[in-house]
Image (tube, rainbow, N blue to C red):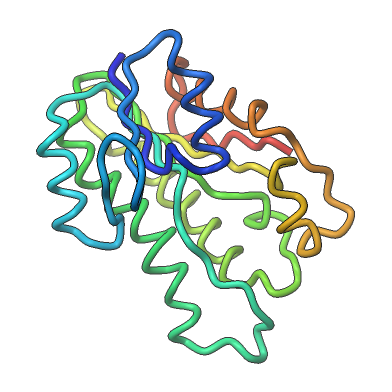
Length: 199
């Protein structure tokens, strides 16, 4: 299969590429690194990416920025960061990318554990991740041509625990390689409308 991995140079993205590369042709896209560059907040950039790549079999989005901060101090502009980037960015990738997928192809988006387990200073992350999962469930009943869509919801990954650990007191981390298996399950398996929780 030809698989496009947006965010393929990040911590989880690199693990996805390592897991999938032995069996598939991988195109890595990132904001500033990778085979192709893309800004998921820019419709023209997303369209240009898919126009350049042409037809493919699977699309993975493992990217998106969020705002972390006390809800009592968060402004609407700050909250909009996650809405514009991780939520609408991933939805934009799915909406445009579906038209470039071969029949029976798949889309895999990324949410996160805080959709179900809120943390302090994470109101933006909880809102965005829950909305990503809602989009996946709804889109799965409408996609034509045998197209599938799922989401992966990871907990904090071990490789990032030194940076994000303080936000997740008492949460057990998982290695990025384990998270990558859920993306493989989404791409190579038969299911749609699922949220694969890696906790």
